[in-house]
Every structure is written in structure tokens, then in C-alpha cells.
Length: 187
Ligand code: APR
Image: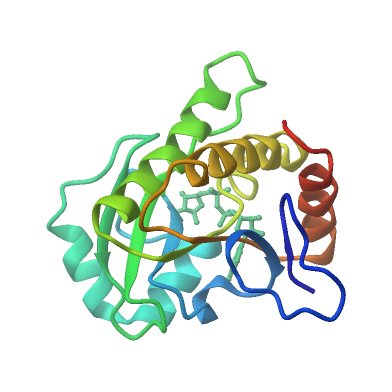
């Protein structure tokens, strides 16, 4: 099931896919203008969604990444998508959870803002995010998804090019966490 954050499509009306779209699945299969990778600061690949994206994209991705000189936490870099259905990959480095008083919330918010800024500047129309930092980096998803939804909604309120921002949950539990948070209204 796919639903928008603020105004779920009326029953029976195909979702136009505009705005914040919550979905569940494998982000490497998303045929959008850009998928976001939850990378590490080397940008040279890893496990989790980073590993899945590099595996699906093929070796051209890591070769392009190697020329970028890494990426600090909270920032983002864009590459081509290679063998992925997505045209581009936007690599961002989330915070490692340290208990919540080391600026993790702001770094995570910056990951979403910077990724969306790159997409907008490139004139992209659609982008898909995984749940950044909520896997290996240990950021509690209940807290992380509220930051994600808040930043995506704020961006969409003034965006000119990007029309669709998908939040792709990798499990039913994560999808339900996002759905409940989105239904709470302004976060
Ligand atoms: N599609 C969508 N989401 C996925 C996929 C996938 N194919 N694979 C994993 N996920 C989800 C996880 O379930 C989690 O919710 O992506 C979210 C982020 O988890 P991680 O991939 O572990 O990323 P993160 O917590 O940000 O840790 C980043 O892990 O892989 C390394 O190199 C990476 O060092 C970096 C660290």
C-alpha cells in the first residue's frame, strides 16, 4: 500500500505519486530519478542498504565514488545510477547513534535536507529515501522517521522541481512506524 503523508488519495483514486509517499520494499528496485544511499564517510560501500545499492549498481558506482574523496556526516554527494533503475544515487552519511545528545538529530535532518537540495538543484522530479541511520548506525526509527517526515514536508512546501519523495521502509514494522508518524500531522 502506498499513502501520502498529508492527504492520502481518496479510496479508489490511483495515487498520483505526488508529495510524500510511504512505501515498503527494496529501494534498489525503485525507478525514480534518484535513490538515496545510507553510506559511510568513505563512500566506498558497506553492508545494509549501502551494500545492496552497490551490488545492484555494479562496479561503475564504486569507481565514481572513489573519485569523490569521501563525504562528511550530514552531507550528500550525487553519482550516476549505473545498472540501477534509478538514474542517480545520492549518497549521504548519517549519524551513528550515541544516545541522542551528540547532535544526532541535527545531523540526520541535514542528511535529508542536503540530499533534497542536490535533487532540486539537479532538476530531478522524484527521489526515494531509505530509513537513514536506523540500521547499523542504531538511530531509533521512531525518532528518525519523525525527523525524516518533518524535513521532507518542509522541503516539499517550497520545492519547484522535486514532486515525489518516497520513504521506502524495508520491513512491515518500519512501514507501520512511518505510517503512524505521518498520520500524526505536523511533527
Ligand atoms: N532497501 C531499502 N531499505 C533497506 C535496504 C534495501 N535494500 N536494505 C536495508 N535497508 C534499510 C534498513 O533496514 C534500515 O532501515 O535501510 C535502513 C538503514 O540501515 P543501514 O543500511 O544499516 O544503514 P545505516 O543504519 O545508515 O548505517 C550505515 O552501514 O552499510 C553500512 O556503509 C554503511 O557504514 C554505513 C552504515
